[in-house]
Length: 125
Ligand SMILES: [Cu+2]
Image (tube, rainbow, N blue to C red; front, side, top):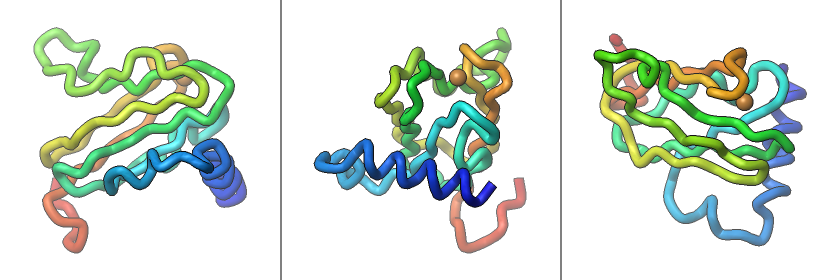
């Protein structure tokens, strides 16, 4: 698992070399992968209001779709639509809570955002 993660990060750095995109704001970055755990990290803990950015360094199209988008009585808080290879998707920030999400093209791909008010204290969600 660790080796996969290091490779994914190296790949992401390589794909953005020469571009300032990662320096524009202090976003939490999540990488898409074609193998488990698919979203790296698959559970990301972020502070409320912090932008979250998913990068797709794979040769495959993916989406980042809040699970509630499929539920009639719940708000769909984020849905990237198709993210092309080399593309990315950014959510400007979310309020405190847990946000499970998945890939609309590959339902096996599942991740979760845990948004807290303060990273220094364990969340009581
Ligand atoms: Cu996918």
